[in-house]
Length: 306
Image (cartoon, rainbow, N blue to C red; front, side):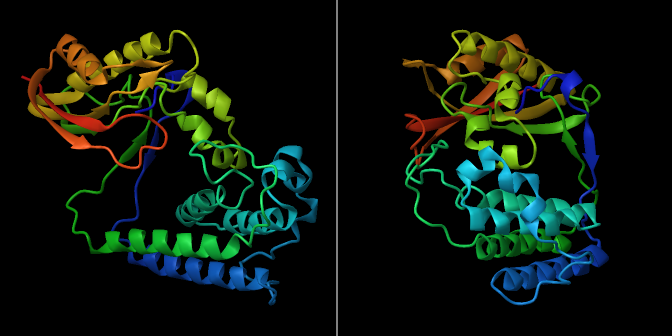
């Protein structure tokens, strides 16, 4: 659930390539070309790996940019820039986006970020990194395999993905059969900060994004009040678009904000009642891998629109 103001983002409607057999053939070809690119970065010929020649990244401004030089060792950065250039030269936007997702996933492990912390902390004495190319290829292969399984899914209707503001949902009243959401943990997890390497690489400023996220600017004194205001609007919008008799599901945990434990479950109950939802049931699950916060469990909450 993002809290991005309407005037900062356009709604984007995307038709995923379900059932498009030609696309899946192109996907396999794209993966093959990326595999040859990885071979090229290992020292073999890379002159004509993609439809356009892959040029030496020496003139890429990012190779000489202080931020990139800080976070990525020179040879690693050269390889990343070459991969980026290859992906960006892909004419099919669907394939290009898949390639960018794979590239985004390998940036942190290829960087000088300290591996012992969930947040991004610079490691001054970071050891020499190996080439990111094999990691990129393995990640791309996994993503391509996951996307390819969609061809086997028998869907009656093509799904529609909408990128927008959860506090101003661009859907008609009573047009939704069910809502499943996992709200942010207020100030407990710095979402934009965690993704700052990928965000900066893709041309975004994580600090500007953080200013617009629900529960962002986690060190600010009014963070809880700002979160509640946006959270309540999201629940009101959820009630508006949900059909009568249908369910809203939320998974929440109780984060620690500025040293104080926040009862997000009770906050949710209060905001949901104010939005005219009726409470149905609650269950709990134990949290795992809690390096970034102190939550031991999460509550699974069900509400209905009567």
